Image (tube, rainbow, N blue to C red; front, top):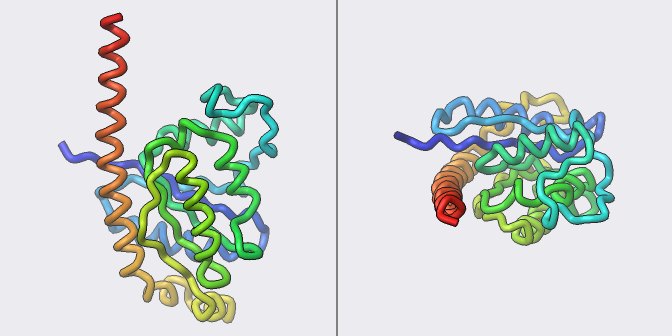
Length: 206
């Protein structure tokens, strides 16, 4: 039976006038062509996490949620087989909301792939580069292909051009990203299931 990985699309920007909705809508429209996945959007503007201040890191006490919002977000992340982040760049880096999200959880991220659609200066490349380092510490697999929405596309859309038509030039990059994301999400889903089966068998034998 084919494996259908579940991917959570994370919208990092929480600004009221954000550009993120344009690449998000384009990505969601493109995902409708891919029945080999299921997708869900996690918009950080709609799920406001408190600033991480737990005295004990989530790596030590996993899945101990301090609020209803944290539980809702944590369960969405836990149920995912991979992630696609719509990543904005501020001052050569990523924004605070997405770092807070990453810091607030641990096992929910482990041994899953993460991919990026970036926008901003140099297509959000510097934010993505830094996010890859954080993903590595969270025991994630960072998918190599990225989509970078550059200045000409941003300015055209802000000038009134149709976002879906403007971003269509990036479709080959998104297809490459999704192909790798599917490979990693499938492989790691199988591996996680095998680990769980071995752990359960060991517990039963104890």
